[in-house]
Length: 361
Ligand SMILES: Nc1ncnc2c1ncn2[C@@H]1O[C@H](COP(=O)(O)OP(=O)(O)OP(=O)(O)O)[C@@H](O)[C@H]1O
Ligand SMILES: [Mg+2]
Image 1: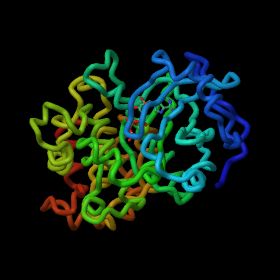
Image 2: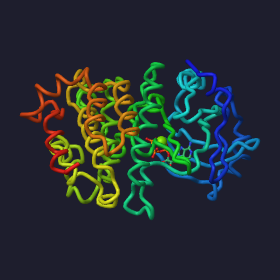
Image 3: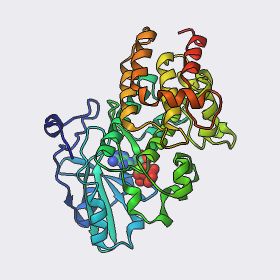
């Protein structure tokens, strides 16, 4: 894995709750069951965080480092050696936008994965209709950018995430973004796959994955596109307002038309940057291309998001040309295949321009 010097020496601390991230040169180690039992005060109700697809998650603390302990109930049948070798692939991933995997416990029938604790919950909570303070527009763009950088890093190191969704995008109070649970879907058997247990998760599956069960970097990009739609609309894939329709099916024509006013989360209707919203919608449409060959790769997605985040809303011509250059690879695909029909899922460039005019930017 490649590390920049800074990443190794810097240790970031949340400005609000002072939670410390582990140093990025942390060496993964084995934990004993007794250690984890003590760290979580006996897996107490007080330390219970949430129930996920793999088992319960508990908060704990070891030597001043806050940790999240994830029970891996469905890995029980795996032999200790097999479990360790599968987990091994995850141990070296170190990046500002990736949750640090601290180690594991494989003792008797117990299997636990230990991660750094991320202090401000997961993206699903921040987008929820029950959230008292839903994420503001600028933070949504920031989250998209941070998650994309984390995912690009994983892809550059030959790790397919396999489970990109808002629950696995964790935030600090400073709105630092950390991707969790990369590669984890691999270590539980198919029959217990969380995605099968939760029907809403099917929405994150790229069409070719649903058809063949084969994962790739491009299946991650598709899932990331679904997350972008959630950031824009503030809706879950199972949102009641969709009246049983699926989120991507509902959003796809609106993304194609560039109908941002219909797409945008009503809670930020008056506070979003229209220009950024256009480009983000367009990007989402291109991540959701049904054809994996025409779908963007994470390198292009990160470049586009960097331009979107840095862009100023007043300078539409300048930003258009910058953003267009980052899409140059897929520009032809977008123009010839998408303006007349929905088959490719891509969004045409002229429709974006037309809709910029509609919004009087
Ligand atoms: N490292 C962590 N730090 C803080 N909270 C965490 C951490 N990991 C998980 N959580 C919290 O626990 C919840 C459950 O996590 P878990 O990963 O078990 O299930 P999930 O993310 O909902 O689904 P999946 O099993 O597909 O990942 C998450 O939604 C998140 O709110
Ligand atoms: Mg998770």
